Amino acid sequence: MKKYWLIIRNTWDEYLVYRLNFVLWRVRVIIRFLITYFLWSSIYTGTQPYFGYTRETMLTYVLMVYLVSNFVFATRTQDVGSEINEGKLTNYLLKPINYFASLASRDISDKLLNFGCTIVELIAIFILLKPQFIFQTNPVVLILVLMAFVGGIVIYFMVSLLLSFIGFWTTEVWVTRFIFIILIDFLAGNFFPIDILPPVILRILLLTPLPYIYYFPVKLYLGNLTVFSIFQGFTVLVFWTLLLIFLVSFVWKKGLRVYSAEGR
Image (cartoon, rainbow, N blue to C red; front, side):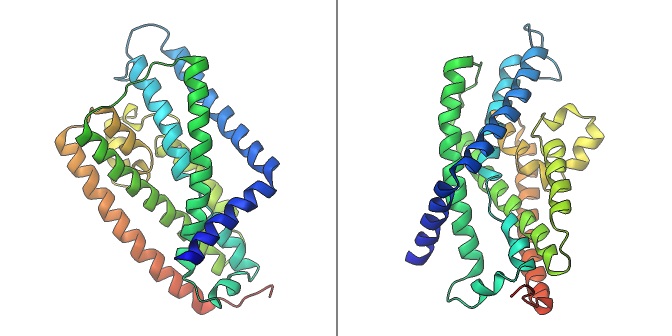
């Protein structure tokens, strides 16, 4: 266990060495959030609801997505593709550590650092903008939100890994990841709650893993899902979690068979 704690600390130290890169990343994230926030804020200038959301619920949705996304989206799985292409993966395979545990440790370090910055940024946002916000106090709902939140982290981690494993067969990994990020922005509920889309499209999307990364946990927090919708959501979430874990294991084994440590 100690060796994985050292990995967390080393990853943290790496960020501190490249401070400017991290600061510019946080600036980008804040600007992106402010664009979304002011867009919806300008739409809800009065008390009239739109798309089934009041100003208070929509701004709460936007702020909660900002909080969730900064934890879920903070990952080091994007490094896997380059580690495979450059032959760096060999360094991990030859060491007496579990590669996935090592990757998870790096992920934890990334998430904690970004999450800490997000909390500070949210405090500043509440002080400066004084947004309307719904504070959920129902302990049952909060427990369900936490469970869905963890499920979203696992789903994103696994999907991101699968995309990086493309590096076993091609060097063009970034293009696929870029397309996936765009899909997440529009289909996982990053820019807007997907239930404002036509019902047919919503039903199709809810069968995919994407809404369970952002949309489902935040809608749970708002407390306006029916018992059936909650049960259905967790059923689909568990299904995709188990399926993705199986696919990651399967593709990993297949990839190692063709891995040639090119570059080393």
